[in-house]
Length: 262
Image (cartoon, rainbow, N blue to C red; front, side, top):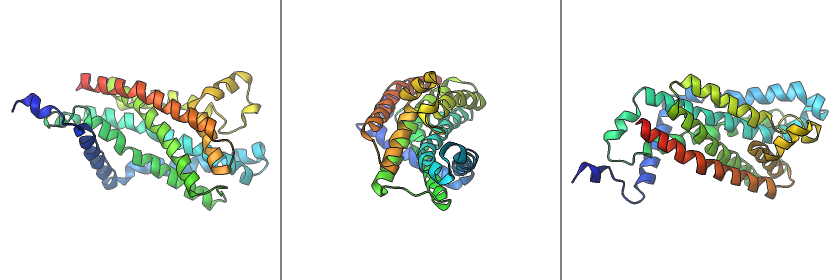
């Protein structure tokens, strides 16, 4: 049997290998829980800071502000968590981690896909910490468990799609610091250029126009509808379409850049 035959993935082989390597990533995270410090501290920090600094001024009370803020922070913290996929990927390339996989009879893209899938645990941790802390300071969901799950899945879907943008950066840039710097430039307009902190109608016209097309703002509106009750179909559909579009563009670009670099 030739080397080419050994390296050629069987049907569904890429999916199987990717899931196996995603499991490896989860084990690595479990053995190094300090890697989750950002997604455990950021939800608490953002919730406390925004609620008690802006709640009274924007909504009249912290209780009312929490109702609209928490769904928005759910989207925000998952998007910030997605940045780490690109940073970790760049760091692993520099340290030669992916070089070890090239001699294995697995799909060339499996290590990359597995690493990104494994990072999804970060989104789950961020959402769980956020909802638990928000409940501790008085936040209550107006709907039910299925709506909480749906809002969480929408936030995770968008973050997973956006993570491929950062993986592409990780594949083409020389150091993790550069990936992180550009990731913040991308994330700030997405997260803060929205109705996260203030109602859209209070924003200037040019910013309202951006909010209307911003995928993060669409996800926040869908999450509010699911957790508070209200319109869901429009913003949820927009979120899914944005997620699919971002994934369709940036995942192939990231895989191609990784193959060229490896």
